[in-house]
Length: 296
Length: 332
Ligand SMILES: Nc1ncnc2c1ncn2[C@@H]1O[C@H](COP(=O)(O)OP(=O)(O)OP(=O)(O)O)[C@@H](O)[C@H]1O
Ligand SMILES: [Mg+2]
Image (cartoon, rainbow over all chains, first blue to last red; front, top):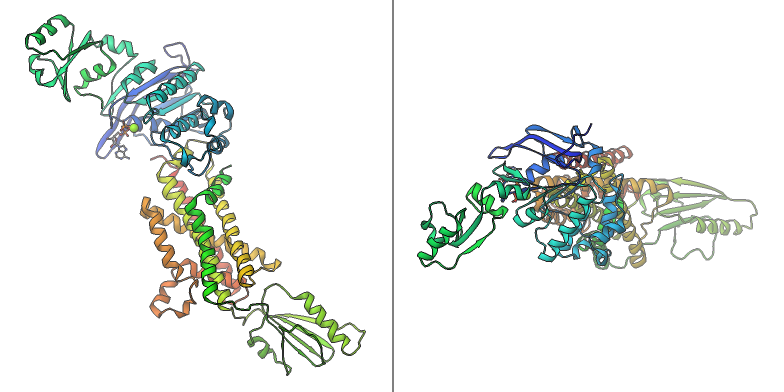
């Protein structure tokens, strides 16, 4: 019945050729991808790429103009069984500001037929100190953590997290990454959107790089880096970009993706450029090479 | 839990608590003070063909046997006519009864002639011609206004704030049922409305001795009016939210202030200049005030009219509420 994904696990989500055209823009233009149990799939793209539109179509919050979606092995609309097995954290979340953290968790639990233990949820998300605090009095980061916690309240098999770490401090971000990885190891299929390259690189089994409503490339982070043919990246001030034909200028810096690092450095030194950096390529460089622009 | 959440919000949210509970009480105290400490005990008048001693000194003695027309027009709540060994009790208002005092009166009347025989008491309920005192008029207006506030704020909160800021979107992803959502949301407002109006009634009594307590047989009608008032106000909040989106809550505050002039909080609607009186026909609080007066025994509308207005309000509220819930719980 259930098709198996690439890691041998069951496919929990399969998206085929979905489209969403707004009068002024093709927000989602023919997108396909799939997610297996125990896999984190990241949709990576700049502002306005269509990430939110894509996952809200899958969640059933927006209609689609074309395409079909299979949830847990069956092509169907989002029905109550699907809702029960799906968890969601929006890009922007809103709450009953005057309820406490524990009341909010109880409220959401009451709206599903199955749920995760409240205590466990509070423990995992380290909300213990704040259970009796009204949402109104939480910090932005604490609210965000609660929003992510609520995505897991119904012990879902498939979870959508739309830019879950925006607004978190570096420590809290890493913390949340660990939590997400913990749920992955419990066999949840997780779809994550982000415009943080490092986040996609650290967490994802598969990355879908999206721009202008299209998925422009896909693969595991390492695959993407390898297949881009990039060996090293040299970053130097933008005013010297004319030294190389294929340097890409983005902001104050120029980026050179090259296999011949030594002659590139020689060229820079010859022109008295000393403030350059040589490093391994990242997903960011893959994106830069594909689109000619930096993601943020 | 959803019902509990809505109710909790009403009492924890500072703005809502202020608007729904504190403000009506402030109005009540303010207007009560302005209109003086009026004695508003139940007005009882009596006629007796026997000489009676020590009758309650607040009761008014009538020197001649009143006709039915006179009884209706004299503006008392209760008129007792003891004549020729019989007693007629005319109840002109539905305010809480004076049963025990009537019994004492009956015993006095009997013992005035040393009669052992039981005096026959006939009760007549006369449903109109009662005039509200200024204070009563205002207090009922305060109740209407507080329900307007509860309902309208809830409508705006639900469909302007919660809906536009994505809380409903989040609910859409759960298995919450629309009807359950509507019932929880309105049920919480009705409970809040009942609490708020009870507070007005109790404080009116404690501070100004204005008796707005409901006799038991009218509790159902009273609750029905509360329900109808909340529903129409909720509907109004829905309309504001649909038209004004995120600015609905400031518009609601303005509308609330305007409406206060037409609900009888400050003065009877007939005091307004004619053109403004016409405007008042389009303001729900006017009708809410009328319905409440009806419950308190004032013939503002016919019985039929009463039920028609109530039912219309309730249906309007349900239709608008379900429309808005449907709209916000639909994929975009
Ligand atoms: N309801 C709508 N009507 C018209 N255009 C829309 C609508 N919703 C989204 N868009 C457009 O579709 C495009 C994709 O938007 P979307 O929110 O999916 O981007 P995103 O990748 O999530 O961006 P971000 O990183 O900023 O969250 C944008 O250009 C946006 O303006
Ligand atoms: Mg987005």
